[in-house]
Image 1 (cartoon, one colour):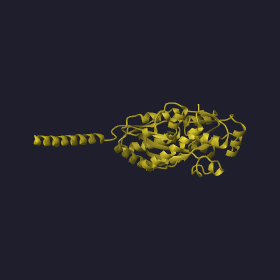
Image 2 (cartoon, helix red, strand yellow):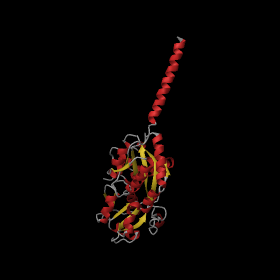
Image 3 (cartoon, helix red, strand yellow):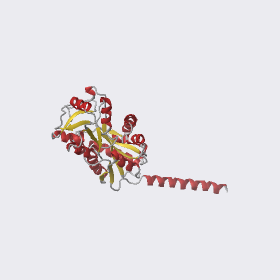
Image 4 (cartoon, one colour):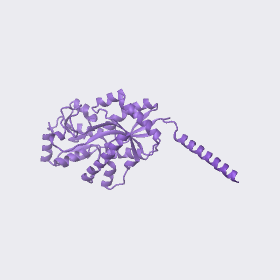
Length: 328
């Protein structure tokens, strides 16, 4: 009986070991073996799209499988972000998000609606760019500099408007920060993304926008719009003549970054492959040429550093959103 009991335990251990090895083998299935969808939660023409497309092309070459960009716009980026947060965590659905990802869950709470996703449903892979937003008006506007702009806003509360990519998005929040700091009022016109908001500015539907350099620099070079100031710390290489609010004594700062995310339950062996591929993509000459040419130089962060950065910013942006309050 004792021998049988011992033999049973041995056989049980062998079976358990076999199952464990089998399970490990299953979790280490080859990846990727099919195409990957990169969700860009805004329409074409904005910062996320301008960064996402060259990065997707590079990842396709590096990983050996197509990385297909899908623009899934709406709710200031919330629809696309929520779709990825709820997707199967197998590495085949990834997200190129902007810093609005740090804002939307808190905005949902402030507005009193059900949260579309939680920050802990996503985990960062890499940050590619980080640029201050730029205050832009049409070239035929009467405002040649920020001083004349803010004087007109204060003298005519509600007469002028500004466009954004949606409520609490990365084009809306910096303008609300500026309005609060400088004590003026403009009407907010939300669009579905930066691209449509820029079209609205060019077409005369809105008087100003705040957007990332990469989505507007070509329009500036073409003489169609004028940059008055930006929310950064120093002069921008792509716009050396444009002053920062900080140097003018206006206490507002805001950075619009673009980063890659996956569902938080994605296995480590997949996220590690994505991290390595993202790192290679950030050094790829084609990627750097396209993104630098758009006025948004690569400012790469790998996952651990990016996570610390994101956690800190999310806390700060939560305070900003609560201060802005409910926006209809």
